[in-house]
Amino acid sequence: MNVQAFLSIFISSVFIYNVILSRFLGLCPFVAISKNTKQAFAMSAAVTFVITAASAVTWLIYRFLLLPFNLAYLRTLSFVLVIAALVQLIEMVIRKTSPVLYRAFGIYLTLITTNCAVLGAAVLNIDMFFVNGKAVAGSFYYSVFQGFCMGLGYTLAMLIMSGIRERLELCNVPKALKDFPLAFIIASVLSLSFMGFNGFKF
Amino acid sequence: MEILFAVIILGSLGLIFGVGLAIASKRFNVKVDPKLEQVQHLLPGANCGACGNPGCFGFAESLLEGKNTVESCRVCSEEIKEKIAGIMGVSLEKQTKKIATLHCNGGLKVKDKYAYSGVNDCIAANLVLGGQKSCVFACLGFGTCAKACPFGAISMSDEGLPVVDKVKCRSCNKCVLACPKKLFSLVSISNSVYVACSSHDAGRDVKAVCPVGCIACRLCEKACKFDAIRVIDNLAVIDYHKCTSCKACVKVCPTKTIRVRE
Image (cartoon, rainbow over all chains, first blue to last red; front, side, top):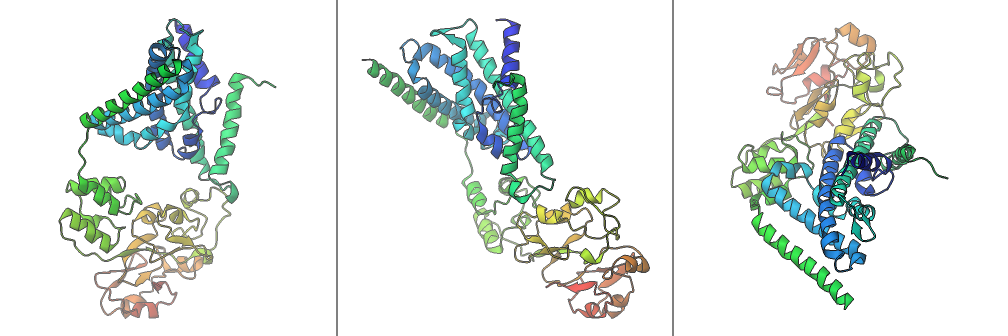
């Protein structure tokens, strides 16, 4: 484990390979729940939380269950199962232990079960931190940290988007462009600007 | 052989999660008052916040905790209120419906003092020298109230004034709070007479900018037999405790400022 590796994971998953704006994962809430900053933040917080937890659990499942039995090809299927069960469990625990947090997350927590960003993060972790069917040194910590950073990247994109949309609410835009069409245009411009971190390839 | 492994592993994984979740749902079971769901189901679900709670769910909770009364919901109809009171086991006090009423009749009749070309919103326009209208008390006509109304009861007329739909209005107070000129108030449905002006300017100043403003001539004061209308600070004000909607003031008003709700 070295600081450099963590730093590069942070930079690459928050900015260069931003989960929404470069990898295009989890777009549904990005368009649907980005109308006001407060809701967008609640959603992002819930996503960050779930991605981090799912990264840890899926790594364990992959390393200790799927690899020993040569079942790596069942990765997607089992990860979907694990994430769904995990989100349900987390929801129950939060509901019991902290009603305030439960209220803050609201319905977003359950919606995340089907968010592709979570599955995407889990699959990407496995792709990056397992070489030839063996875990890289410190792989578990890298995975969890990368999951968390992808959540941060998600939060960043959501906050930028909702901030812009809140301000555009007051502007006089043509009727045909109101709401979603405008959101798509903003999303494309944002995505282009985030590509600047990556560099254009023609 | 290999396929058997796959089936067993995945099957047992599913089984473990299933049983685990079943146990967890028992352990982490949160008891919810069945009344809460019933009450929430009956509430309008507009989450307008007129009752002072964060949305209808918050209102249902505060009802069950006894912090609020059924009457505080201004939106739901009398029948539904009775149903909710039935669930809660309390009696209901009757209240008359109130309707948002605009105290300005200027609209396009009031000239602009400058050409405003900023954000299409009354609050924003009001920040620039109190709006573009030459009367400082006048409705700016950008429809901030119409946007604020959660029930679609306010529409903007061709005269640049908001029109309230009597049936759709649920007296939620949103427009009253949204208007930067404070031109709306909630008037009981049984009182049909209202003053369509909010200007505290002296008569000649009003006359210079608006043909339909209150010029504080006090004719209404003299015409009223019930002492229900008074000119206070250059503006006719109706005391709805005394007003009988006899419309005597409406007839004498020279500028047709005192109006009858349609």
